Image 1: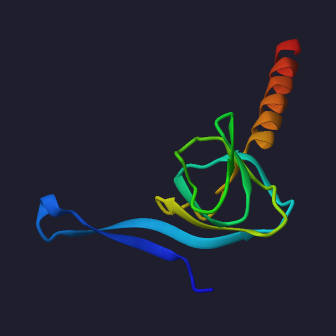
Image 2 (image 1 turned 90 degrees about the vertical axis):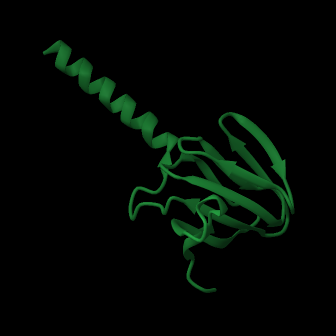
Length: 129
């Protein structure tokens, strides 16, 4: 598999022949039967074009069953998860824009829940002191 695309050329007709580059990433991904990605969000937008297989996707509390030809878009901060609910690998084309950061790409909900609990316990300790 080749390296992910690092930019997208967009020709804006209203600006004549000016060409702009938008930092983005694209990749063909796959997940085996039973695989899942827990609830998380990002600081960038993503889109997913399902090529094959069956997916149960959750986005901001709503659940959808998706198959070949379906498209999902998640905006910044959209809490989402995916699970392969079929008997064959799921394959999808994924885009991300702007280009994701080098670290802390995923912000898992379970981590934030733990951070909040730790912060609350720390606050209670400071109040009791």
